[in-house]
Image (cartoon, rainbow, N blue to C red; front, side, top):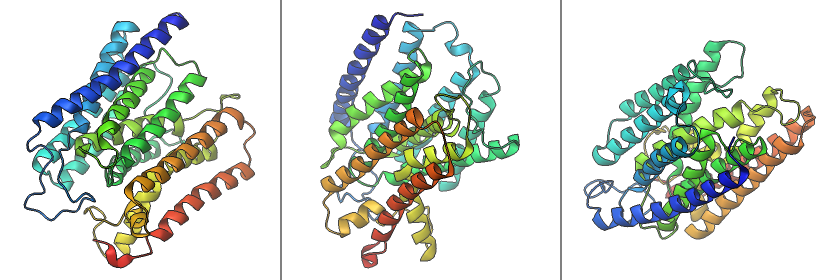
Length: 368
């Protein structure tokens, strides 16, 4: 067992180093960027930005992930790290998601191929959970039937990878939303003294890489994260969601309550769920494909109402922060769970959903 001082020094040095490294690597990538991720020269621009910019942020995310894995092996548990099937599954699935996103940034891959890769990422996580000594499973534990749990796990992985990708439609939005989701998970881990877990190092590395990326992604941005970044983050937050929100145990009683699990997920992932659901409903209503990009997201409609990009970023950051605080409060202090708790927190989620959804019903003529 490592001492508290040792752990503090390791994580402090690691966190600061990751932030500085990501700022440096993104600076270098911007300096030498030519065509990677810039593919709007001959096609109609469907991104919010009218200027095509390098989609390079995902590269720094993935490199930071690999560095985090290596640092964990060096400072904590080098002997068993790669003997754990779950860790190998996570590394393999995240690598596959990143490479698929990178290919899409460079070559514009077909949606069907992306979908199949996303499904395969979910299958990798399910299989790897069978070969691990860890207590936390990568399979959502909600039903008695394993097949139902497997199905909802794959659905969750695919939905989250697409949701984070769709949310990447305005400067800073996806990065800061992911930042608060991962921060909530790392606080949950801290409550349970999980400082020596692989997940803690990965989450801390991800937070550092997001801060380093936001240095160039806040409005007006100089780079995008691209599909390599959104697919990486989508799978990462899906994994975190399964282990620390879907399969959450009460902090005091160490029992699982299905309604509390569902409510926690809704609160933590409020913005990705709300934005994606609103877009899908609106596109189906006007007989348009939900999988084709457009300027019809909740962020875009807030702009149509008169908010500028910076203000919208702060609105989403505020909602993310509030959701983070509520989720932490539920986990740490609400131990006697009743239908009243379920109702109150569902009302919060519905209030956010309806508020943002109704904005999408304004200025429909500006949708593209």
